[in-house]
Image 1 (tube, rainbow, N blue to C red):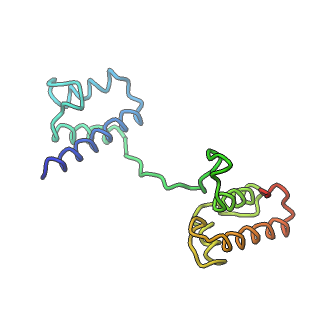
Image 2 (image 1 turned 180 degrees about the horizontal axis):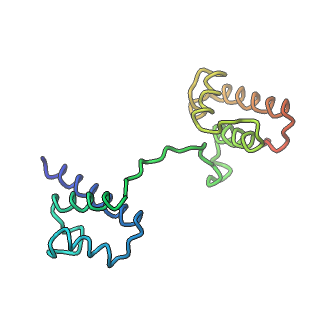
Image 3 (image 1 turned 90 degrees about the vertical axis):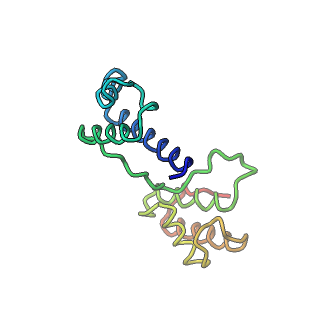
Length: 158
């Protein structure tokens, strides 16, 4: 294994160890005692553990009931509130309208994937970010019409 690959594995193991410490709500003293127990008192720092010691430490945390959490996919469309007004795009407006309709209870699935399917149905493109100006206008008008049909007044205007 190359030096770079070893470093990557080490950093990943250290990240997992610190996640386990946090998830198990371990005090610093308990954490250092666990490391000392695994390393036979050689060290109290996970950074100076060998590869085998880091693996044993992770196994010890698993025996204590820790299971690494899988990364969560973004569940909802990203907000664009952090952008200044002059940087907001038509795609941001489409997302804002989509979220407004979801908050009003019109849309059951407010995810980015559902928005992508809606855009694809109207334009053939899978995300609002890929729409031309004319295609974006088609989607915006469709969302406005949907809001009118459902008597939703809180949808983003302008």
